[in-house]
Each structure stands twice: as C-alpha cells, then as structure tokens.
Length: 128
Image 1 (cartoon, rainbow, N blue to C red):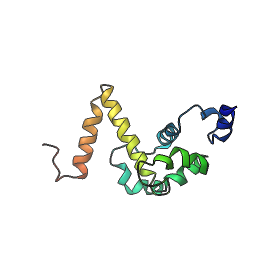
Image 2: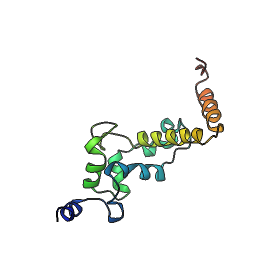
Image 3: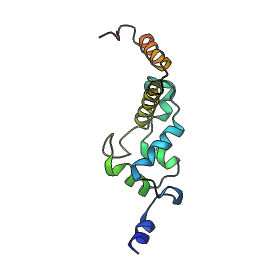
Image 4: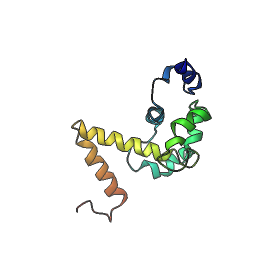
C-alpha cells in the first residue's frame, strides 16, 4: 500500500520512475547538447542556449514537480534551476565527453583541445 502511494506521487514519466531523481537531467543534457568543443560554451554562436535550466527542462517536457525533485532539491550550480544557464551543464557534459575519450585511449582529443586553447589564447602557455 505504501509503495503504491509513493508511486502515485512520483512526478516522473512512467518509463523513468525507476531512475533516481539525480539521473533525470544528465541524459537530456547529453542528448540536446550542441557544444562540440571545450570553449564553445562562451562562444557567441551558442548564446541562444543561454536560458535557464528550468526553461530548458520545460521545453523537454519536464513539469515543475520533476524539476523540483531532479534539480532544485540538491542544485549543484546555484539555488535552483531558475538560477543557472543551461550552458553550464552543457559545458560539464562536453568536459565529461572529452575525459571519456581520454579514458577510452584516444589522445587526439587532448591535442585538439590544447590546440584550440592556444589558438584562442595565444599568450597563455600550457607548460607548467
């Protein structure tokens, strides 16, 4: 009986009710992330994605109840999904993808990222 009440209050779509709340946002971010490079999140070409995470999630079909549970309960970027640009989790996702390529044995990502950073910031040296 108690389990039935809990499921009735679960705001997630039926096919996602077994997923923990913190696992809801990352797949959506990854699926819709337009960024291709590590520096893209500050590029003017992506300014149209500088909307609140709340607005982005609503556009993906999330309700206020889902957003409250999946993001606002333990928001890692600010106080709520209203306070953070979607570019922040997009940037985190692209960084994760670049790290994953490194773990998979691909070294080309490091060269591409370093070359891009040197091109955009010629006065900054990567040597330490």
